[in-house]
Length: 239
Image: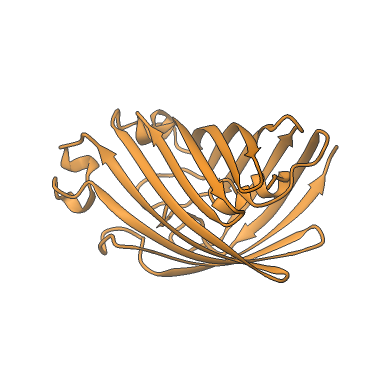
């Protein structure tokens, strides 16, 4: 019930908790492409492909940190990349439980008018029996809004030989907001939405392949309907 650098590059997925932490320090990098970048169920590239990459350091103490980046192409701004600086601590507790506590700083580049949208987020994930995940993430300044935002996550992974099948759902919610500019569907009573995801992963040597189905219950005003993504990542051991 331990963690690899490769798994850590997929921090947005609870499958990151399902692998093995090496018995020494590791530095790794990854580079890949996805047919569409979907963030918390909402497309950030309007159905277009995105280049992605990152670098991750892990230590046998359970500490880890790194940088993950993805291309972006949104309707309402000129942001070209999202960079996520992350650090955390992963620790097994017995044979059937592990926890991961982490912090992430999100930066958006390519549009000076969006410089104020950078924000920090903290979170905790619990993994039970290498399959069931419970997660919480929260920020007090989501996308520079000065309002809090929270995500509650539930996931389950099934190992099918060389493949892993992930079932994931999350509630994403504004906290204590009555401003329609920061609520969903321009309706001040709608402060949350649900995300649903099914993912199939396959690792072959230094390559990872992932097929994902995403959906939310947001309306047509958001690029968050049913969508399918396919991604490929190549991993490199640097140290």
